[in-house]
Structures are given as structure tokens and as C-alpha cells.
Length: 332
View 1 (cartoon, one colour):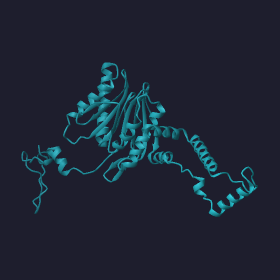
View 2: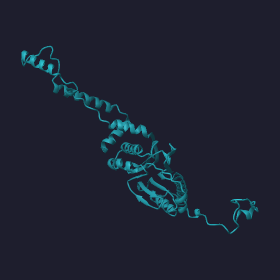
View 3: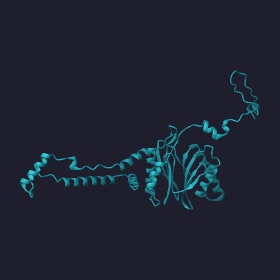
View 4: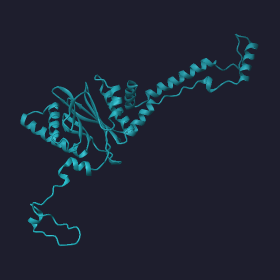
């Protein structure tokens, strides 16, 4: 029913375009009735990106993400949370449209809670991934953009699933989603081991996201790190991505070794004077002026001093720095 039939409203007769509503039954079908075509023609062209990752190892599942929400060339929020808890033993990373991700995770939380009340226990991670995939697949082709990695611990142990809004559902050990995922995969593929320790897993996740934020313009802010254990999930840390990357660069930067023989070359006159003094004194005698060590001995002493300084500096690194250094040595 038209608005004019309800409110008895009539527009005045004026020259030019009239704002009155059409008669009842005379509505033309707007182009917005086909959402896909309408969005393709009139939708905003806003580039967005992120870096999220998750991997499974013997002590649980690690989930990490940056905190920058981008909208075109603008940073909409520098401190957003892209890892959303679903319940005590399940959380997921979000990539795509922020509103779609938040909405569908609320829907998933509601459905899992209802199943828990009906069945008396929480559904498995595989059941949650299948449910989310089935719900979103009905909206295929309507510009829904949700890409998530579901990380949880159930009766089968640590589990990891990738779910996309077109209904795709994959199970695996490593997933990285977002515009920075190629850079994160480069670090993960070289440093991942299923039998890693907890600290090595933390260092690998921080290293992967930090490198991705440095190379990807749409990723940045901080690095959120979560760990899903058998007892439940925990938020491990939030570290500044720029500071973390600078620490990684300092650990990777080689220390130059100075060669004493090249740094302090002997003048030709001094060399000839030393030879004449050696000939005049004899091979087995030394004069008070012969206080310099031979060039080879001085070089060995300089290298030993540099090596000792390097070992002392390595021992003085913080706990997080040592973990990152170990991760980088494994990757390198």
C-alpha cells in the first residue's frame, strides 16, 4: 500500500519535478531489487585489507592478527580486534567486511548456545564450521564478504577450519587470510613445525604478522596473539607492530668485523725500519720498541674480541627478543 493511501497525502501542483508518490499499484521496480547488480553499479569502491593467521600445533591452536581496519586510503580504526571469541573453547579470526564478520559471529554464537541447551554439550569445532558454512552459503552472490579461521579445542583435540562466505569449508594446519597473507605464509612455511614449543609458536606468529604489516599497506597497528588450549582460550599479548618489526631488524642486522691489518695499514717506511731493526738485533732478540704483535696475531685477537662482544650482547637480549631470534634463525 502506498504512503498517500495511508496518510491521505497529495503533493501540490508545482512546476518541475514533482516529489509526489506514484499511485497504488504503479510502483516501478527499482534497480536496487537486484542487490548484486545494484552494488556493482552503485556500490562503493573501497579497498580494504588485513592480516590474520592461525596454525595448529601440539599445544593447541595459535591465532594472530593485526589491528588496523582500513577503508580505502583511510585508517578507520587502528586498534580493532580481529579475533572474536565464540565460546570458551572456540574463537575465530575475521577478514573481509567488518560488519558482515561481526554479524555472522553473533549469529553463530546464538546458534551454538541453542544447540548446547538442546543437546547438553557444546558442538565440536567441525560442527560449528559446517553450521557457519551452511548459513552463509544461502547468501552467495549478494556481496557478502566473510573469511574466517575457526580455532578451537574439542574432544578430538586442537582443530582448525577455514570458512568462506560462499560456503567453502577446509580443514588444515596453517591458514592465513587477508591482503597480507602472502607475506605471512612466507614466514610460516619456513618456520612451522607441529612439535614446536609454546614460546616458539608465539615467536613465529609475531614474526609472521610483523613482516606482513611492514609490507602490506592495509595492515598495521598492533599484533594480537591468542592461544587456544584444552582449558580454553587466552589472550597472550598485544604488541606494537612497528616496534616489533624494528626489534626483528636489529636481531637480523649483522655486526661488521674489522680487520686490524686493513684498518691500520703500516706505512712503507715503518715496515722497512722494522726489518732493519730485526736484522741488526738478530732473530732471537727483541728490543723495547718491538711492542706490536704480528699482523696475524692482532687479527685473531680482534676477531676473538668481536666474537666475545657478540656473545655478550646476545645474552643481554630480553626474553621476547631471544624467542624472536631463535625463530628467525630457524627461518633463515
